[in-house]
Length: 538
Image 1 (cartoon, rainbow, N blue to C red):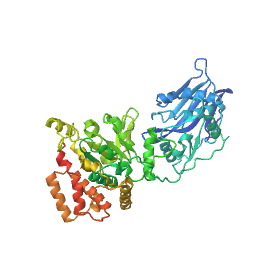
Image 2: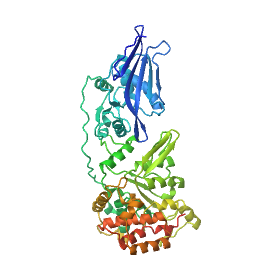
Image 3: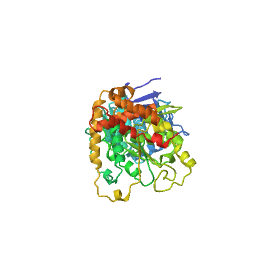
Image 4: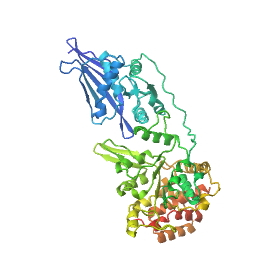
């Protein structure tokens, strides 16, 4: 069988038999998302002449989902609309590796380009070291895809130098240095580029992000009274500590929680990229901005499922706790959530990531969020109120409180009571501190921690400290040691609660500019654990 084959580095192979064309093979590179990671995919297209029964047949193999299987119809219509040749032969499309499930419409563009290369027996000189993704509209225009930043990072890790994708995703992908990103608007333009007929300039890399804080419609100075709660918010934001607020309805718990974002420090470039990857693969990214530069604030309803909160599903994706990465997760009316749903928070709160295991493999999503939770002391909300009478029976109160387990409560650093405020405080003209003033102190405290933990991978804030780092950074005097011992015995604190007291004390000392922990710092930290005894959670 005489054979004519293009050089090895070319993307089209043509095989002849008795001078009659039988089939052609073309190959380009694309990418598939697996969680928030990207895996390189080879898109191979074989085209051969069809008999009467198989004319126009397109077969896609390589574990495609429904959206990938439908690519054939989108691609053939887009090729016709773009005036690119298409004959009704038999096309076999292989997406390798074959054991990796392929999802979504991002393979439309590489399939279309490989099919056209087969039809025209055309080499694609620009396809070498090029990763191609994009969804096609029926008129040949390109629509944005999910996970562009992850795809760009994966392309660079695989040794590719260039990435071709829809224009709407270009700014996001261009954040990856060392990779040329080309944003296009149509299939016709993409074909001209890969054949060398058209020269394009790569998308310029955005300057190192600076995240100017937007004007928030909410501010901490709008909250009347509750000065001790505002102090707890400041400590939580400064050291990355989880916070639980307990109080009757109408005391401002939700109002305070929603202002946590206004005192949080600005995101670093590393944090912005981490957060953007998660939001991008979830399809929540604003394409005009390119990056998530404001810390997320997620507040899921108490009817959320375990999968909705944790992540997973048939095609595992990030849940609410991952979408809150580097931001705030607010759970209002905490006991209203199913206990099983709350229990899945224990590992993410401890490890800063969630592991989802399925038959096809194991996925990990980052979950370094600040948890802010709020609850009423009982179902009616007035248990222990000096004015309004509680309507709940002791059994109802006990059942309500038992929805939150002791191990979960142990992982929340700050417990603070939010009482009702009287009319005098509500109508007072006293000017409270603004969010900007508090945020400045938080930023100074964070800079201290950044300097302290500069040589410690995985430790960014005080709440991240492990036992070894704590021994070094949370040394206590003999007086403080006696105080901690008394608190452990009288309040029945666990070993985890002991460590969290020291971490909070370290943050309180940092806010005050103190190098060593004093009795005052430890006492304030201990008072934030008083609910361990008062609420007596199981």
